[in-house]
Amino acid sequence: MEPICITAYTATSALGRGLADHLAALRARRSGLQANDFTNEPLACAIGRVEGLERAALPDGHEAYECRNNRLAWLAIEADGFHEQARAAIARYGADRVALLVATSTSSIGATEEAYAQLDGERMPMALRRPEVHTPHSLGIFLSHLLGTRGPCLTTATACSSSAKIFAKAERMIRLGVVDAAILAGVDTLCGSVIFGFNSLELVAPEPCRPFDERRRGISIGEAAGFALVERKTPAAVPRLIGWGESSDAHHMSTPHPQGLGARLALEDALARAGIAAAQVDYINLHGTATPKNDEVEAGVIATAFNETTRASSSKGWTGHTLGAAGILESVISLLAIEHGLVPGTLNCEQLDPVCGPQVTLQNESRDVRIALSNSFGFGGSNCTLAFARGDCA
Image (cartoon, rainbow, N blue to C red):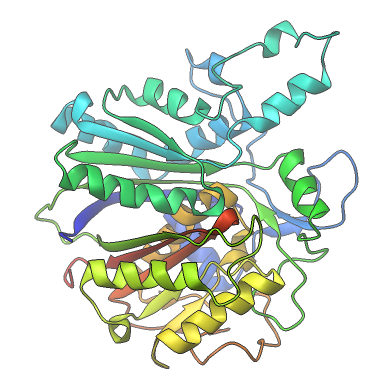
């Protein structure tokens, strides 16, 4: 495929607001995970919570969209000057030539939980009767009003692959001439349904998650928001999206295919679309959730498909699993690896599972990263791999 340019990007997570905070935390190997203080009922686990989110407020005129998810989107879009860059792109191309592609797995369900908890008979409290909030499309509705876009506005909700898949959607729309640019947003926030829901599946670890550790016991839930602006080729030496691969193995609702069929297909598709061999990949940001089966299957695929010189790691020990925002957050981390020559290790992993090959690294490494992949594998077998390249390598 013809590469497309990533002219701006940012993220907000438990590591902080903006690229500088994330880079500093990665370099210092400082995790954002903390003891759970979010749920009213006690649940001994670790979470990745965004500091200051409770004190944040939406801008004037947007009060109808008030909910935790939209507040996080507002916090994140203001970081690294992304809001201004997005508006500049809309002015440059025209509001109808810029797509707004958003991704979330839970949207504003936290606000809906609050409303149901306060039911007056069969009615929600008047202050919480806001249809703009109680919909899976709340994030897209809010951002379209905030930014003034008039192009395609789509919400993707494919569990943990959601905000990886919007990169693929953007490339298709730009290639087909539907739009000239796309604003990508992936946002998911903490809520009781998610934390207790994953716990009911016995997938939540009581301690901070330990991806690829032989003693791993499950995930740590986090919250995050990430944004990216993608455009046709520009003269600037900015990073490129050079390939993507998608698959759906449909093996089981919550367990990956035992031979990693869907993961392999997504990886192979991304490499083929990028026109590169596996040996050219310098770094892979793994999905690496710290659940027993996910890590086992993904590690097996990486061990057989890539050279020993390729480095691979999971960044979820820093941020937790941010669900629908994981794809774009980990894409941002991959782009930081390219820009700064930093391969983050696998935080909290002490005893590497023997199923892992030499690719999985525990310690940070300084390394020339020209090409990076980012894996996102969701419930139900929804898989996506993205391929990024440094601007002078695409």
